[in-house]
Amino acid sequence: MTTPPPFDPELAVALGARPELVVTSLAPADIPALRRQAVEPDRDAVTRGGWFAATTHAAPGALGAPDVPVLMLRPATVRTPVPCLVHLHGGGLITGGRYDDVGPVAELAAAVGCAVASIEYRLAPEHPYPAAVDDAFAALSWLAADAVRLGIDPDRVVLHGISAGGGLAAATALLARDRGGPPVLGQLLVCPMLDDRDGSPSARQMAGRGAWDRTANATAWGAYLGDVAGGPGVPAYAAPARATDLSGLPPAFLDVGSAETFRDEVVRYADRLWSAGGDAELHVWPGGFHGFDHFAPEAAVSRDARHARRQWLARLLGRAPGSRPGAEPVGEAAGRVARAG
Image (cartoon, rainbow, N blue to C red; front, side, top):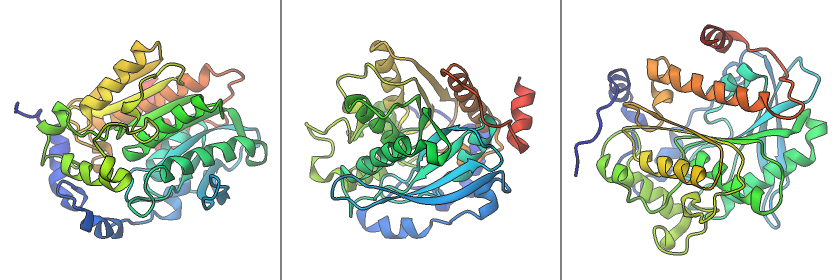
């Protein structure tokens, strides 16, 4: 085994200061305790001080499935249809809800004048595959069908996901392609969890290190896929790295740390998108572990990562037919965008 890449110095300090967020020895019996760690953000963090109007909805689920809870954040003073980020939270498919990761996603959306639809998909092991991706696709379909009522531009919907949510976003993009819609303008995949086989060089290299390692990963995939995890025949809608055809997908942004479990599967996915004639932007952040910008949002590399996501999203929306961002950037996000321009 080769020596693992070093952590960025600022990130290493943050990782050591927050041991409660490190998940490297997760067993199935630990899942309930992991869920109890979740803390719902306050309303100001969710709405960015009232810049967004927050509403909750129940999207009709797949045939025979329950409704899907959705948190909708929409620019409060904008009356024209706006683009929308369909957000799928992280948590290894085993923990989390619609309020997870919403603060950073709202910051991103405010910077480019987007709404956010945060999806509370069902969790494994109680609800194994295909529950989570069925919920994600059902919510996307509801959003497209009810776009006028919700004040959303159905032609400017971008799938956004972090970690497990990044994998679900990629899987939902595959489903939308294969089922002929709804239209998806892009897919923004932050440190996505794409491959159930858990055997890449980076997974082995980073065992026991960082914030999420191959032991935790194996537990999560096992909860979602059961005994078939890692074996032959796992469908692409469960683990997008299994897809044999990546053509015809919407433009993708992918980022990952150089010092994390998912590095190689993310790089490989981007390479396969290019090989299939796709549009993809890839960033491998030096010294980054899994979810590093949530641990240390003010670290230089974290600021760079968020800036790159904003710039990609702004370019994507700017080249969309009929593009007209719904609002100007606000608050801290606006200052960073202005300085970068």
